[in-house]
Image (cartoon, rainbow, N blue to C red; front, side, top):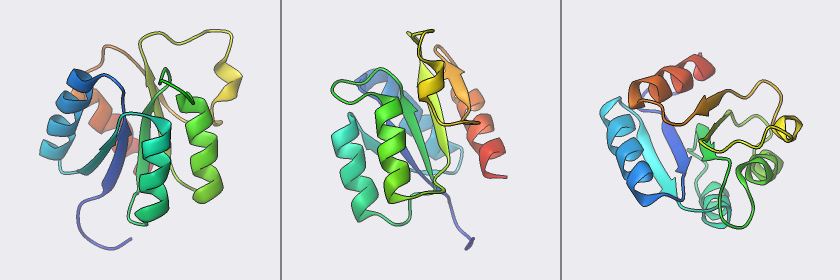
Length: 121
């Protein structure tokens, strides 16, 4: 991997949560792209080959974070994914990508950065 900041695509429909994470993860050294839904995220993934990791809320309007992660993997088979949710539906844990970390909301920006960093090592 070439030197420089890693690029994270953050998908979060709550504007305040998204703004807080963008600011904190940028301060942690990531280049952060943001989307509020799966459609916008897939558009960015199609246009931006520099995205190193996808962090997505599970509960999104339209296609949820699980659907997004599977569609993203069609575009980028080895793209690392981090899931986040405050309202995870316990009946659906098998819908996610095997081994993808999950952050239960509320979580700190430091915890998010630590989880992303561990995933990329």
